Length: 183
Length: 173
Image (tube, rainbow over all chains, first blue to last red; front, side, top):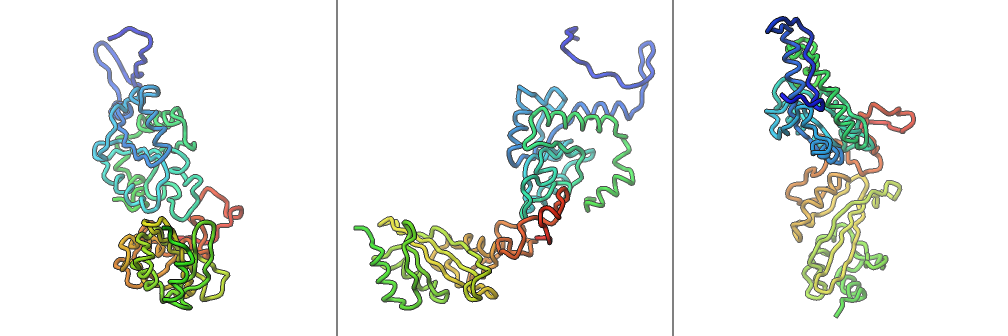
């Protein structure tokens, strides 16, 4: 292992350690593993997608946070990043992509359009993707800077890290999905 | 030799009489009105006449004039282009506000198919004889014709704006 001080190691979760062993809760280990390997599925429709390209690329480098691989198949993705205006005609497609993702799955609405419809207060545009799918993190901005997108992803990591492994089978979660008519 | 607008006007008037009128030069496009019942015939003549040769249908679109008299509340505007002499014309057909119906142009130009679907989608103008008159750009579930002035532009589902300040009245989908 390198001894360079530039490398920041993830902190060990709370637990009990002794000579040659370390005991902690399964939740925290699973949460840590999930949070540091979130595979993004970019659903980019406009300018926010361009900002996301910068976020992925070497200067801002999303890979530093464990999101090395863009998953262009929803089946192998953990976090859906919706970036840009979603027309009402596209809403069923976005929904289908979400439904194709395997649990556990998270959604980030990047930018004003995905969060609320933005400047497009009009008959043809979906007024926020939370009208059709549940959203975990909203990133404001029009478009947001790459730092903001990174901040949103790190906020999502906090959620993922502290999420109970049983959350997806809880009644609240089933109710949430049922309210969106997703089974 | 360029095709003169006077030639176009004379030929059309000789052939169709009162069904074509209101000839006017607007900027660089020669414009006139056609009675809706004669539209298909006029378009076929413009396309197939060996002198006129308007072989390309550039555009079909609609206009809504809710304040006009009943029989002139909708207009369908056709733009045609003669590639041989590089001459463009525009003609308008005014339709009844309650029953906006006109014959399809797909008999003469297959390219009119999508343009007429778009006009139907936004204005609800019925093109009689169109092979597949259904919405093309808006979602199929939409019940309004959004470019008609009686429908609001804004979406009723907006939650982060106060309706009192933005004049939103009804849902539009």
